[in-house]
Image (cartoon, each protein chain N blue to C red):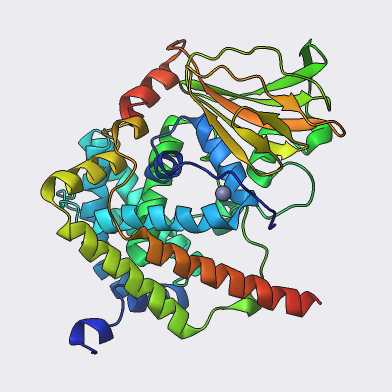
Length: 220
Length: 187
Ligand SMILES: [Zn+2]
């Protein structure tokens, strides 16, 4: 899919995605944008290549004595068909939602369970772990998004329609980064609904073992 | 000027092809000998306990064998490919959902890039490796800490000074070409 995209992923986000240090919510927005953008796909491969170069220069940890033999035993036990189904990247699809997002929603746009949040705006919070949240937003054309405060940086990807704010116009595929100190009041362009995917850094809240583990391992 | 360096075949491609086409266990053993200790070190640096790191390393290397046919030398060096498998496994261990991956590009196996494009990309990757090694120690350590999970994205400077532009434009070029070929085929 090639579109006219004016606003791309910031370097830090793309590098975080390739380094594997972003919370799941931001990973989802990055993967969704790359699905729509060749430019950032190429940048992703470059940042992945830095990871490869670092691996080349990494120290060598001592392996357990039967490491290779144990790996061959693993290989023998592999259910090839099952593994293939699990590890093939999602195929490109037609529709509004890119494939990585579709697997969180359980389908395309018609599968989203919207909840009204006032002012004609609807949202659907997607289930992710970690220290950030992500939701789909649907803003009717011409409507101003009510002053929404967020307590960390927020990354928004436009999937359909468009909105404008002090930073410019954002159409399908465009990404806007907003820091917590920025007050922005986006207005959806008249016409079709504006559908966005927005990841927000949430305040620290730990409710289970998994997020704590993730924080420990991934330092988010 | 063509030096011996430049004509050397790219690292590990022959072994990957032997694994892919012949299920060559000796080729896998030498790949394992090189990559497994590095993958394990990467996992430990990223916060894994050594026992866990050993187990995950074996799992990562088994995945290298299993996914050998998906390895595409026009998109990544073997080191980069192994790195992405190790990184994804590290993430999948702590999350219920698999790491969100971008959509696959819609081209068929018939649109395979030319050999010289593969070689060019592999050489770019090696040049990137050399550039990384040539960075001032302080900066190199910073990049390493960013990738090995010891720094968050906001803690490092935007510019690393690495020549990412070359490899990026090479991949961009390959993407454009493949897309063009596909358009001609589908009319
Ligand atoms: Zn982009």
